[in-house]
Image (cartoon, rainbow, N blue to C red; front, side):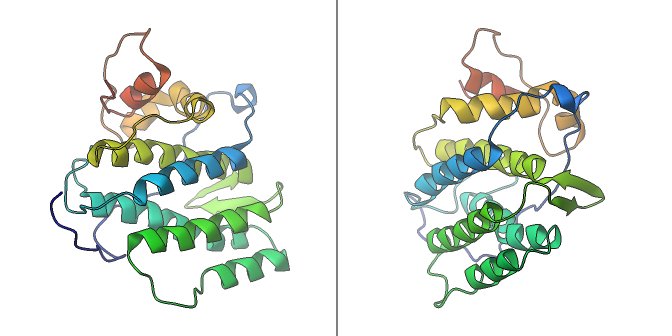
Length: 220
């Protein structure tokens, strides 16, 4: 399956932060976004573990498989520091520092993913729900930040699965939650420049297909 070269962690990949603004956030369904973030990370990690060819294309036109994986690794790598800025809890600072200093060099992207995903999850687990996370010029609640992380990982899990001919299905509860996070702001997604224009699909199509369509992906 093509080249087996291991991509460096700093290979070109977009790194972005954005805030999807809901028309009325008080009306958003309530989800356990920490649990969903863990699920999304597990799903992505399962696909990463099975990648062999890193130079192939992905549904993200600008990215190779290596770029896609490194983007998601980079997002996780930043989580402990971002969360530490939002809380003064000593336990979080210690968890972040210890998790980000592995005892051995990274042995490829699979190892890097396992290190930084574990560090991010550990940091989120000890962050108080009242923490406010500074993301660019926005201040997010912990729940909102985890919603963005889980949603980003979920979409990129499908990208990776499609690019590497792996299982494209995602857990139903994750798909439903990400749909609720993205669907009210279809116009904002496209206007952000981070997603292609929405695709037209049948209203009776599976929810995953409809979710992918509003991010400009054809999941059929």
